[in-house]
Structures are given as structure tokens and as C-alpha cells.
Image (cartoon, rainbow, N blue to C red; front, side, top):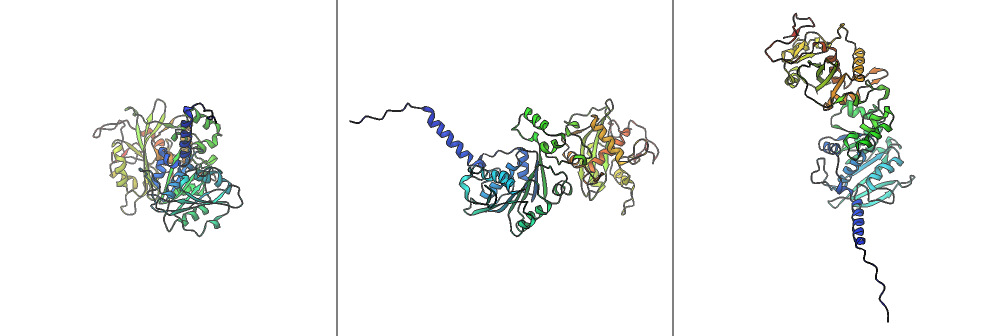
Amino acid sequence: MTSDPPSLPFNPYSLLEQCLALEALKASQDRLTDYQPYPKQVAFHAAGRDHRERLLMAGNQLGKTLAAGMEYAMHATGRYPRDWPGKRYDRPIVGWAAGITGESTRDNVQRILLGRPGQFGTGTIPKDAIVDITAARGQPDLQDSIKVQHLNGDVSHIALKSYEKGREKWQGETLDLCWFDEEPPLDIYMEGLTRTNTTLGPVFVTFTPLLGMSDVVKRFMLDKVPGTHVTQMTIDDVTHYTAEQRAAIIASYPEYERDARTRGIPQLGSGRVFPIAESELVCEPFQIPGYWPQLGGLDFGWDHPSAAVRMAWDRDSDCLYVIACHRQREQTPAMFAASIRPWAEWLPWAWPHDGLQHDKGSGEQLAAQYRAQGLRMLGQRATFPDGTNGLEAGIAEMLDRMQTGRLKVFSTLSDWWEEFRMYHRKDGLIVKMRDDLMSATRYAMMMRRFAEVQFKVGTQPNRSFSGAGNENSWLGA
């Protein structure tokens, strides 16, 4: 007679543990379903609907490569979330994804899309969508291409590339999509863009801007070529770090690298006009006391934007606050004045020397044209009290005020901060590009002696002005 095998003690947790492990495995092989982007990542994705070229410029380890990898997987599989705000494909795609070298492509782009070697299927492309993977030659664990099942039944084709083999390796193919992870040389970027000319498919770039004002950064940040879009993501835009962790990460970098590595601001080094941390001059918006005098600063433009700032002056601390700004290209005086006049009809306006130029059509001075639109233009171009108006003197005073806490800017003025970050020198000279709001701020600062406390329209200003042509007069007051 045989005896029954001894029974094992019942373990109520073993089945649960197995189920949890199975769920964890399934989740690791379908990360796409659980993608919860930060607001800045959402903004990057949403821009793809209307912009062909996109740059996601962010600090290190903030999720820029992950965002691009998730979007790439969506295009390759056709598996978009219900509320997807960006571009969609209802068919398979042919695309390239690239890094600087074969090694960096393997360790970044490939890892994000597929997972680590030996764990393929744990990246952004779900394991059940991977049809085939072809290994590359010459680089251990580097893959050459990936075939991905699309929802419509056909197959998407992804090739992994690098910049190190040169522009010639980027020729010939027609693509739906091209992703550059880390900053490419301009000639390779243009080749990748050219590959999508037939399809007009998206090209996106993700990097931490350690190369400063490079040609690619310039294309997006200064030239602003039509069809381009920039999303900047800082360490403050992510929630997977605590405040203490953020502070420790920021402090771990040399001061000259902090803006690039934690805020995605191009590292300009000694080329920056204002080499000072944003935290030294940023402030949250607040109600301006009625007894603080205010004035506006104007910079005229057409091909480059016209720009305006509104400035408040706390005389007790001698601190200037930039509280509003506006910037727009190809605006007539009537159009631009209509945009800024609602700020305050009583606001005095400082303006530069080119306001004295006569319009070829009407023969009127530019400053007079703005005066005719209801702006209270000061009676003389912007100068210091001694009558000078040197650029470097103005820059020096702005920097001194920033360093001593006497120039503050509202955190909400994104256009102003964009210019501040990009304002730089080349060969010692200030680059006169995308400096319109910086100039308007300088003019207002120079003429702060004519700032006024708010008064009701129809009453007299606090200061007495007389004599056309005198700097103490209003044009049309």
C-alpha cells in the first residue's frame, strides 16, 4: 500500500505574490499604457499637431528622452491614449532614431525604446508589438533595426543611427519620423529633416544644452524658423524629486553648468550678457502698490519684433520690477499700440533713438506715430541723466541691479525670460538678435526718473511737463 505524499503547509501569500509578480512583469512589458507625462512633456507632445520641428530642451534626468521614446512608440504601434493631444498616424511609420555614437545610441535611445540588453520588451515599445530585432555589427549589444506591429496589421520600421559616421550615412531614405537624442551637428540635423520632406513628418530633438549657442540651438531659439517649436523643462517641472533632492542635485553641479543641467538653459559661459542665476531676480507676481511710480519701455521693430515692458519702481529700496511684457513681429504702430495701451492709459513711455526716424510713407517720426495712437510718449529718446545712452553702460547698470537685488522680474513673463537666457556675446560683442525685450527694459530703466504714479485719465499727471522738445515734456500730453 502506498502512502499519500506529505502535504505542504498552505501559504496564503504565495498565490498573491505570484499574481503581483505577473502583474509587475506585464506592466514592465507595456509601459506605454501607464505613461503619465508631466505638463511640460504634454506640451511637447501637443506641439506636434501644428509644428513639424520640435525641440525638448531640458536638464539631465528630467524625462526628455522618455517623452520622445513614448511618442515614438505610439507612432510605431498606433496605440495612442484617448486624450492624445499631438500628431497621430493611422498607418505604420518608417523612422530613424539616433544618438551621438553607437554606444550612446545603445545606452539611451535603444534602452528607452527596447529596454536593456537581455530585457528587450521592457522599453516604451510594448513587448507584444515587437516583431523582429536585427543586431548591428561592430558594437556589442547595439541593434540596427526594429520591426513593430501597428494596429492596422502592417509593420513599422525603425532604424537606429548615430552622428559619428557622418552626413553621408544620413542620405537617401524617405522617412515619416526622425528623432535626434542629444544635440546633432547642423549638417546631420538638416539631412534628417530632408529625409522627411516628402512626408512632412515630425522631427524632434531632445537634449541638455551643454554646447551653448550652437547652430541647432540658434535655429530653434533665435532664428525661430517657421514650423519650429521649443519646450523647455526644468527640474522644477518634475515631481519625482523632493525639494531637498532638487536642492542637492542643483548644488552638486559647478555653478557654470547648473542652468544647463537642471533648467535646460544653453550653457553660454562667459558669453552670457547677464551671468547670473535666474533665482536672483525672479519673483512671483503681486499687487503693485498705488504709490509706486511706473513707466513703460518700447523697442521699435518690424522684421524683428516690436517689444514693450511695463516697469514699477519701489523708490524706498530703489528696486525696479518688470511686471508685464509684450513682443510681436510685423506690427504697425496702430496694431502694437492697441495691444499695450490697455495696460494703463496714463503710463509714460520711454523709447530709443530710432523713434526719431521719419517714416518713408507718412514722413512722421516713429515716436509721433505711437503718440497718435494714444501712448504717452516721453518728449526725448531714452538717455541717462547726463544725456548719454551707451549700450554697455546700460547693460552694466542692469547687471549691477540684478546682482544687488534691485531688478526683479515676474516669473510669468515667459518671453522676457526666454530672451534673458539667450542674450549672449560673441567675440566680446553683444549679439543683436532676440534682444527686443532686453532693450525695452534698458530704456525704461534709463528713464525711470520720469516714472509716474497712477492718475485718472482727464486729470493732470503728478509731474509738470512743458515745452515741446524738452525731455521734461510729453509728446501730445
